[in-house]
Length: 104
Image (cartoon, rainbow, N blue to C red; front, side, top):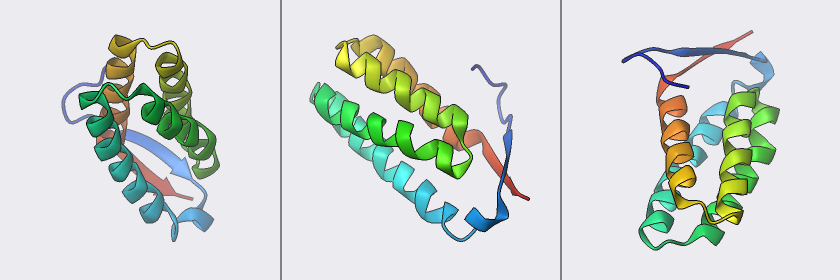
């Protein structure tokens, strides 16, 4: 998903998640740090683990697209496809940076 500069991804999320969404998003920042460190060490097993958790959790927070990115990243890490992992990691970072959540 290529986004124009400064484009926002508007996602509508259940208002019951408003209190816990900041913690979820803060944990994604920690994931970005961990993946960055893991890529520097070619530690695909750690990336696979982080991506697996992301794939499983994101949908429950109303972020299905992020979950799909996590699932693809997990598969790519298992296949040791570092180029695809890098591309998906960039997609993850772009998605999170562009995310505009509306609680309904």
